[in-house]
Structure formats: structure tokens, C-alpha cells
Length: 221
Image (cartoon, rainbow, N blue to C red; front, side):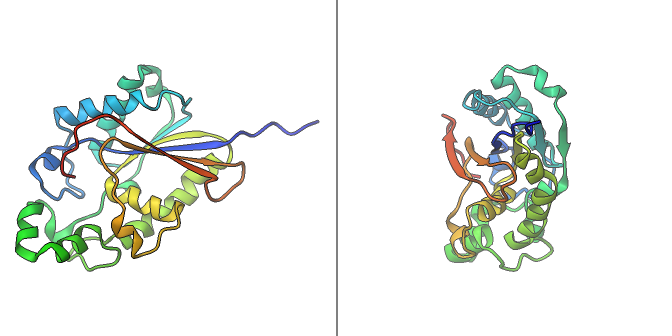
């Protein structure tokens, strides 16, 4: 008897929409704030550009702005039945813990410390964040979770929709695109961007990558 045909697995990744603290220009991290009205609307626009997939499972972080974004995407897809799909919410996919910077106005911090230090805080790989996490520490929780919980399903041909955060997604991008420690500082996950990675049966790394961008007005992340 022939083996059951196994198909290509697909990982569809996007970040949450504009949150209440994004609007205020504050570093949010693990603070559990919701989406703005714009963020909820933009999530629906994301749904409209990913209608060509049949989803098997859904993943979000433990922070409600990802769940609210997922619900907006489902509205945009016009597929309420997706709420019956298996869904996992896990803090391994949470945003960076910004420690002492949590709740501070990003642009006030920039004026205080200068552009170079600000960019190091915001985009750097292993710089010290007092009482918080740097991107390396986010990578060290996101990638083991991806390998153990999500990758096996992609290897089995499933299509997974993952809604996370700018930095947890940057950690995934670093791994999946093999980006250097220095190079990841130049990578940004904008609002409305969708990344699509495809995996052959049993493959550890993606065989191709696609980007899409919803037509939304960009705001400061």
C-alpha cells in the first residue's frame, strides 16, 4: 500500500495591530493592553490578503492584543468557523519584556540617550536591558518552542496561522532566514506585514519565503 501523500506545510506569520500603547508611543512589552479601533480594523485588512490558505491550527501569544488581532483577521477572512480550529496561546510567543523601559515614551528616551543608544535598546541583539529581556533572550524561548510545538506540524503538511509581536517574530525571522546577530538589527516587522514560509515534509527549514503587505496607514511601533 502506498504511503499517504504528504503536502507542503505553510506558516503564515503576522504581528498584532496597533495597540493602545503603540498609539501613545510607549514601550509595551508584557503589559496586556488591547488594540485601538485602528488596530482592529487593520487586522481585518490583513485577513483580506491571506484568503488563499486553508488553515489547520492557530497560534497566538498570551497577550490579548494578539487574540484581538486574530479575531480581526478572521473577520477579514469572513470565516467565523475558524474559531472552531485548534488554537494555542503561549507566553513563549510574547513580546520582549522591556524591563525598566516598560511604559516609557520611546521618543523621550531617544532624546535622552541619543539615536545610537536608542537603536541599540530597540533593535540590538544582546545588549543589556535592566530587569528585562534582549532579543537573544527572546530567541532563546521562541525558537525551542517553535521547534518542539510548531515545526512538527509544518513537517506534516499543516497550514498554521501565527499572530505574535515585533520581537518574537524577529526572533523567528533570524532563525528561519539565518540572519546574523548584527544583521537582525536592521530587520523590522511592520504593521500589516505577512510572512509566509513553506516547508517540505520532514524538512527542518523552509524551502521558500513570501512577503505580503496589507494596505494600511503605518504608525510608530
